[in-house]
Structures are given as C-alpha cells and as structure tokens.
Amino acid sequence: MRKATVQIQYDTEKLCAIRQYMGKNDIALDNELDDVMQKLYEKHVPAPVREYIESRDSRVQEKPKRPARPSSTAAANNEVNTTV
Image (spheres, rainbow, N blue to C red):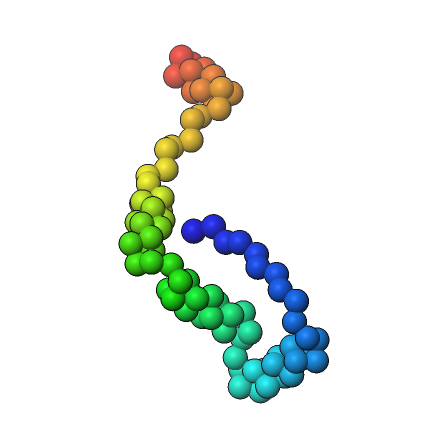
C-alpha cells in the first residue's frame, strides 16, 4: 500500500519532552504515531469500507507482474546468435 505523509504542528517543547522520555524507554515515535493513526482509522472508517480497502490492497499485491519485454538489441543479438 502506498504511504502518505501527514504533517502537523505541535509545541516544540512538548515534542522534545516526548522524544526524550520515549527514547529512555526505547520507543520509536513513528511507531507510536502509526498505532494512533491505525486506531483513528478503525474508529472512524466503517468496517465495510475498511474491508473494501484491504481487499483492493491484497489484489494489487497478488497481481502477477508481467515479464519485461526483451529490448530490441537483445532480440537482435539472439537472432544473430541463432543464425551463426
């Protein structure tokens, strides 16, 4: 799933304090914010919509990749090699 960037304004001193005390406990701020966003998503987005989004995401991940077409020079080299 593609990721978006969320930007907020927050009091600098409070943010420094959060980072300081989370760092003492080896807790990553990014991980905590991800958890909060997930809880907000689950709280506010109806279950059928979440299921739809998750099914779309899983279909995109399961979609087989088409093999790359050989370049014209590679195809030309194969023709030369097979005729030699």
